Image 1 (spheres, rainbow, N blue to C red):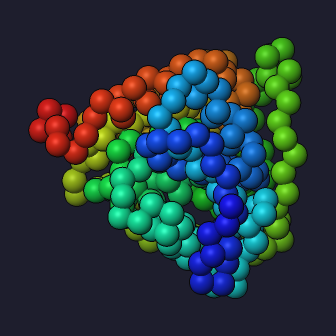
Image 2 (cartoon, helix red, strand yellow):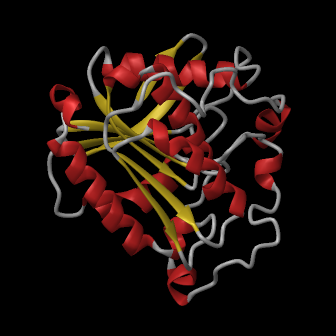
Image 3 (spheres, rainbow, N blue to C red):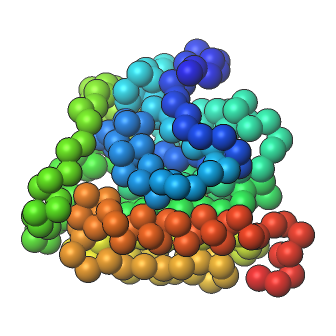
Length: 252
């Protein structure tokens, strides 16, 4: 499917029917890898419509001249959200760079979000730094389960992505004047770069309904390293989202 915006067409795939949830993939990657990681959590579960877009410069979504920095990048995704969901409610999740962007969307559309999943989220984003050693000298995880996971190939516009200037979005992603009341899930790999889970700890006061999990035996490739455990935690998050509504905010 395609969502035609101003000067850019966002390609996305959907699975299932029901309550909408938007999942944003990592970089470098595309929607197919996010699907490979997250779809196991939806086995034998009905009632969810999963939306997996290709982010600009990834997969079948091209880069665009009007995207000049991370603010523009986030702005395109906000347009996508408003086009696909209208003024309706939805849940939201992301992996790595996708989690960084998901947090930006949550800060801008908090009143419409029924739950958020941040998996191995980036603290900062640089399209160039992302392609260097993710673990910063931390021993990689090479378990048999990890080696057995076959992930789909992906395509990206590497030169365009690396042309974007290194600058975080100007929105205050790491502090909000109001707590985010909906159920949240933070997933980290213990063998990932330590600053990831330590720095995101500061977000917890803003998320009173958050589960914060640091998984041993997992690096930045958490979904390959510990997919079964990660999927169980996602299922718990889905359970919590299904039973939460804006009407019971006073109970959070």
